[in-house]
View 1 (cartoon, rainbow, N blue to C red):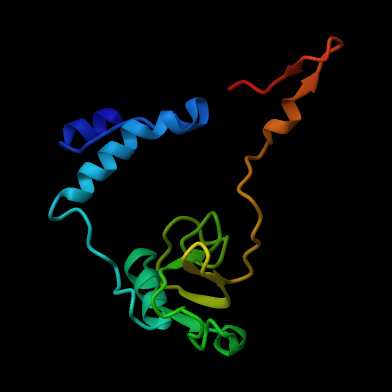
View 2 (view 1 turned 60 degrees about the vertical axis):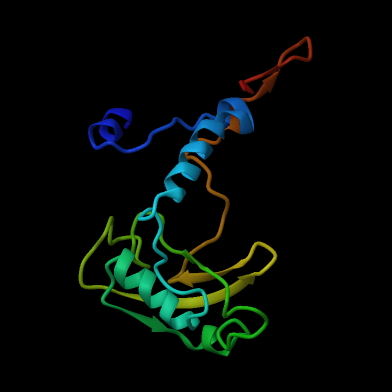
Length: 165
């Protein structure tokens, strides 16, 4: 990764937050702040004041490559769908299949010729965004195939093994 960035004159810093906590992300945070100061570094995908449907359409078509968005009835009826309670000025987070930019986990990667289906909406206004659920998405914590907890044990002397920081 570092070579890729350097060849293109892009800023690069490792993220070592897992190993070093917050201190392991300081160099990367500084690089991000430097990049944000560049005049061309950030262009919003949509205005925050835009209607929710326009925000979802922009993400689905311009980022995911969808041809369009289909809304089921439930999200339209919800307070979020009616854009009540501070939703209008909030950014959108899309919850979708982990293996695809569509709502269909069998369409791997960035498929073509698909429409995404919005099935639910949830305000997370404390965090400052609206979650848009696509398809039959399950919202579980992001865990690896083999959780680290399976490698943790306590030996005869009461020492914990397998929690390397």
